[in-house]
Length: 158
Image (cartoon, rainbow, N blue to C red; front, side, top):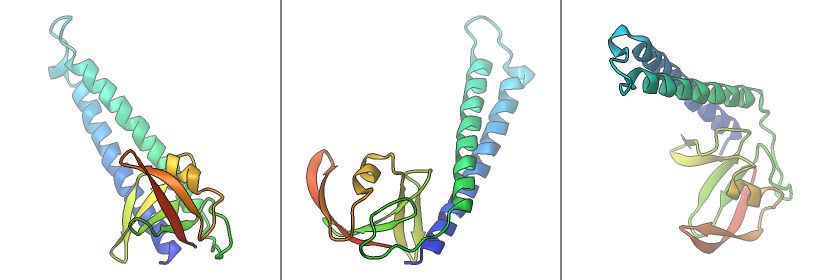
């Protein structure tokens, strides 16, 4: 799998999500400041709740925009079979089911499809990301899946 395509797919996904969140924040802000939502009594909190929601959406959009900048600046470094997992690695886990992970600087949990195969972004700070960092192709380690420990094998690091 071409790592450049993975990074491009993540960038495209983040761009779409930033645009969606920014539009939602603008719409919610407009609702919060609409004269129709002015509080009618001390128990009417529609406008206040809408302003909290707009703020949260704006913060999420800013965080995704920062992740987008990080991905735009990320070099697609090639890893050899003996290289340890680090930022920018594409890691395939063989057992119990084949899964592909991209170790990225942000936007953990983002899932993209490349060549009709799902790739999930992990950050080094995530539980699985922490376990993968520094490991190499062929390493076997324990991870919790559905609350149960499972032995996972790193099939490749590229």
